[in-house]
Each structure stands twice: as structure tokens, then as C-alpha cells.
Image (cartoon, rainbow, N blue to C red; front, side, top):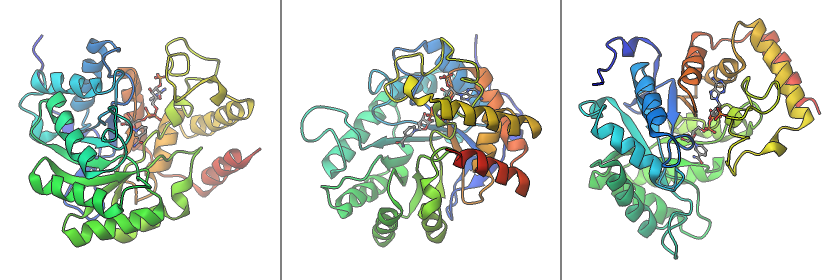
Length: 331
Ligand code: NDP
């Protein structure tokens, strides 16, 4: 059946300015790390992408290595862009990254100019695009001068193959250095993509301050701790969950007794707020004005619907904050 985008799609969620840039991002963005690869059911991936777009999610996040197999998530998006979303390219913010292992030999990993530029060329071919909206250095490279990695981002933007430059997984200190190098080159750092959720709060120790000072946006990844901060594991391990699947990034060992206890207590706080645990976990991140968007993953349409409702209540009372902090700090 032919796809027609929903007319009311821009009335569902707020769009927030990314740092001090001109670009606005949806408060909830969708990442294609899991569930969009060549080994996943294409029909479901396509359905989720279209459902997200129909509900105001204008930003899809990718990386060269998303799959499995690596590269196939970009191919999945490329197919949907060529078919159903044809005609909507200018309504979308599509990002990709390079920084982790992608191909054998010395030029398929980390942060050299050689790797970043050739990897983006490959990504564009897989997505059948002429440019991405945001191109990221996926992680800092201790052996490549930061000037080289940032210089490559700058040249990529100047070449027109990306509209903006971003960084991911950089410490507060390296973010400051990277943003100063980029600023001097004339390509401001648009955005930082760090891991941030109730269980992993390192960004609160300096990174968010640097981002605010430098006018850089922030889009936390794994805001639901890969599904732990949802109702998924309240009563065991569902067969269709990430833990039960073949992910090498989330295994049974993540579900310790302590974590299960915390999830259950957090679920009670969420219920008292009239939210699902996933909604509260996302709202808890969005309550900070320095956050531009939360970058969720999803395996089903109903999860996207549930998560999107987080934007309806991102205000927390002092009592709620303190009971959440107490639950999280318990040993
Ligand atoms: P999340 O923390 O949002 O976890 C997503 C998983 O949580 C889903 O696959 C699903 O698990 C479960 N879930 C999601 N919503 C709900 C809901 N409402 N109710 C119940 N369960 C739910 O994010 P990800 O870890 O998937 O990461 C998101 C994105 O961040 C990636 O796609 C990628 O774009 C980016 N990323 C970036 C990294 C970087 O280094 N820059 C690293 C990692 C991710 P299930 O599959 O079990 O159903």
C-alpha cells in the first residue's frame, strides 16, 4: 500500500534548539543501532521508521557499523528513503558516524582523516544519499591528533557531504578541546552524543557544563539503559528482548538482583507519576534544559508510542527527585 505521511505529524512532540545552533531536533529521536539490520525483519524496521516519522520523529541516528551485518542499518534506511520517505528528505535529520571498527587494515577504525572521509563516502552509498545532516566522530582516538580528526570533520562539512559536525563519547576535557579546534576552523561543534541514563550519570560531572558553555547540543544515547529502565525485565526475561537475543552489548549479567530491585522501586515512582518506567526514565533526562533530545532505540511500534508520551510530563517535584536519587544510590 502506498504510504502517505500523517498530516498532523508536527503536532505530537516539541522541537528543541540544538545548543546555540539554528537546528531544532525532536525531543525524542530514533536510533537504528539494533532492530534495523539485515538480519532483522525489514517489514518491522520499515514500519517503525514510518510510524516514528508520522509521530513527529524527524531525526534518525545511524553509524557506519550498525547492523548486523555492519552497514546494513544504513541500507535499511536507504531503502525506506528511496521508497516511502521519498519526497521527505528535507524534513529529516539523518546522522551517521565513524570511529569504531568497520573494515580490516589500518584505515577502517578510530579517527584518522583517511578513515572518516572514506567511511562517510561508504555510508552515503549505502543510504543512497548525497549528504548526511550530522556526521560524528564516534569516539576519540588516543593516537590521532585531535586536530586531524576535527580537521576531517570540518573538511567534510565544507565539502557538502555533511551539514553539521558532532562528537560522541568524548570526555568533558576533550570536548572542550575539540570544540575549540572546530570553532577556530569555522565549523562549530553542533552536538555531543554521550551515554546518559539513570544508571550512568557521568555527564553530570562536567560534560553538561562544557556543552552549555560552548553552546553545544546534547543527545544522550541508551537513555533506557538498553531496555533495563523499562517494564521489560520486571518479571523475568522476555523471549523477544535484547537480553534474550544475540546482542553482545547487553547480557543476562546486567540483570543483577540489585538492578532488579532498583527497577522495581523506580517503576513504583513512575506509576505514582502516572507514567510507565520508560516514560519516566526519558522525562528524567529531558528535565534538564541542556538536553536537546533523547535518542531511543525500539523493537516495536508500541514502544515508540509509549516512549513518545514521556514529553507530556518532564517536571519532577523535589520529593520525586530525592526518592529517585535514593533508589539509585542504594547498594
Ligand atoms: P535505549 O536505552 O532506548 O534501549 C532501547 C531498547 O529498550 C529497545 O530495543 C527495547 O528493548 C527497549 N524499549 C524501548 N522503549 C521501550 C518502551 N517504551 N517500553 C519497553 N521497552 C522499551 O537505547 P539503545 O541502547 O537502543 O540506543 C539508542 C540509540 O542510541 C541507538 O540506536 C544508537 O543510535 C545510539 N547509540 C549510540 C552509541 C554511541 O556510541 N554513540 C552507542 C549506543 C547507542 P527490546 O529490544 O528488548 O524490546
